[in-house]
Length: 330
Image (tube, rainbow, N blue to C red; front, side, top):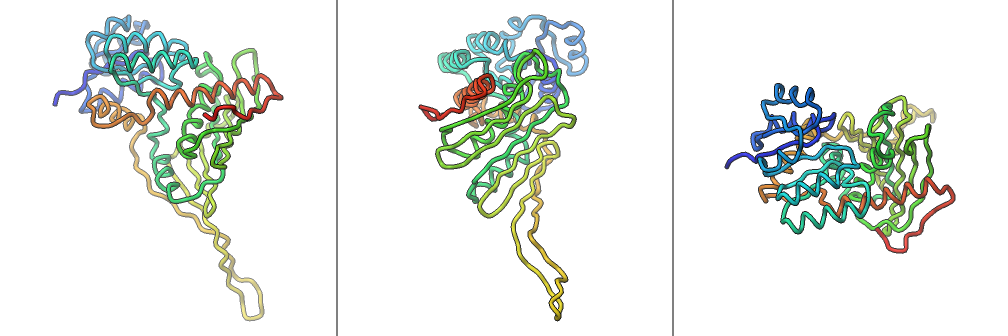
């Protein structure tokens, strides 16, 4: 079977990585990249042996599918143009800047009969995949996510909720597997720009509670998620792609005269994970979805749910005394 003809729209940091990985995948033919930056475009031509299109509209007639990695505020305009041109779309998270824009994209994909997949890349992190598998046999009580960045200049067109926290909103929705019925949040900003530090709490209908923290004011990069279960504590480190399971054990050994020689309060299991790059796995999955062999891990409706919660979290931050019991569970 011929490889899928793919293009990348927007070759900033994330788009560049999309182009890099697509140029390596056997099931993809990287036709070209679209970006108004000529120097960046010509460098991509040299690096990836593809074409450069100054305007993304010129690319659409040459491809079957695109990866959209433009700023969030452009997602709606670019995504609508691609779907209306009959092109399958993988769009970076968040799906759009507003619920209305997300609904437009979902409707356009349905009308065109084309794929709309949203790039919540942590779904493809080997540590999360193992966590999801192991948690299936546990009773989750509390989920705790931390996502800190020392890079205050990244994605300054949106708040830290849409830039960073939305990853973990998506992950806890998948892990809790239940509607959100209440939420609260606090945070603020270090300057006149968007919100750049937030702590949020989500309460689920099944009793699970999730605590999420995101910050662009950190001095160390952190990407972690813990699942506190009835019989264990599971800790994931997304940066190092590992998973540890802690379990209680009250084993002790004493000498004949009663002196405590040895005490074990627990043990730790190191879960093996694969070394595959999450973006590589995500793009392979996207190509399989284009071929009709798989269904998107995160489709437009799932991504819209995460966006809706992100919007409510921002509202709570802007109105400090607001704590929401949701009239309609999300």
